Length: 110
Image (tube, rainbow, N blue to C red):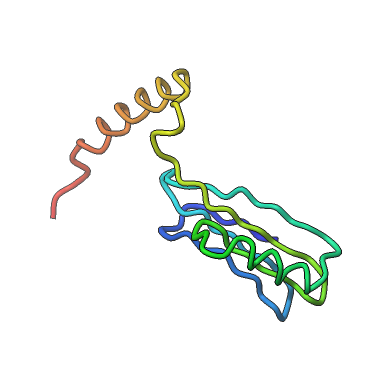
């Protein structure tokens, strides 16, 4: 498995040649991935599961028939259903203010 961060798109992929699963969960904490990996899964069970969850646009299902491994990547969108942690929120506001001050300094002329 390979996990990547700070990309400007949400992306999951299983390379069937190497059986490496890749997950990129976007940036700016707009979404994250709830990843489930199941081992020893038969292809018939995968087909049944795909049918069961058909229409759920937040699920990306990848199956390695070689490894008999099922990767279920659930995209979780961070929105108002999540209450912000007040301590973390205070840290973010503090460092955002500091960063904005630094970004407003003139670094040079052309």
